[in-house]
Length: 87
Image 1 (spheres, rainbow, N blue to C red):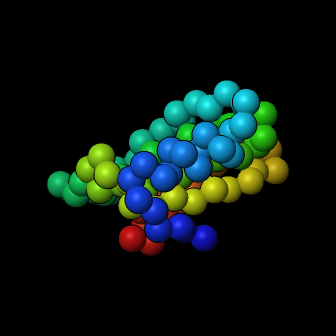
Image 2 (cartoon, helix red, strand yellow):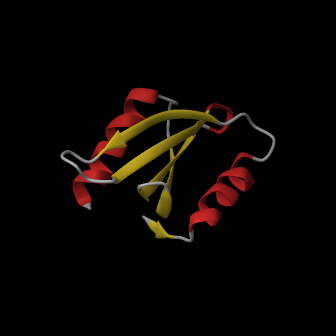
Image 3 (cartoon, rainbow, N blue to C red):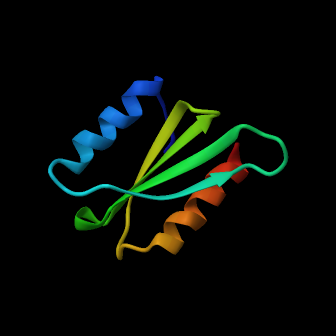
C-alpha cells in the first residue's frame, strides 16, 4: 500500500523503521522520458525490509514499506519499477 506523505515525513518514517539498524540506499529508478517522477529505494538488511519513496524531483510524495522473505536488492529494484508502472 502506497502511503501519501509530506516531504520530510518519509525520512522520519524511515529512521523510525530502522531503529538502530543500518540503512543503505539501494537504487533510484526513474520514470521513462523527461519525467521528474522517480522511486528511491532504501534497504534495512537486518530487518529484511525495503522502503520505496516516490518523488517528484526531490520532493517526496508517498512511500511504501515492504517486508521481504529474503533481503534482495534485485527484488527491491523490481518492486520500484512496478511502483513506477502504477503511477
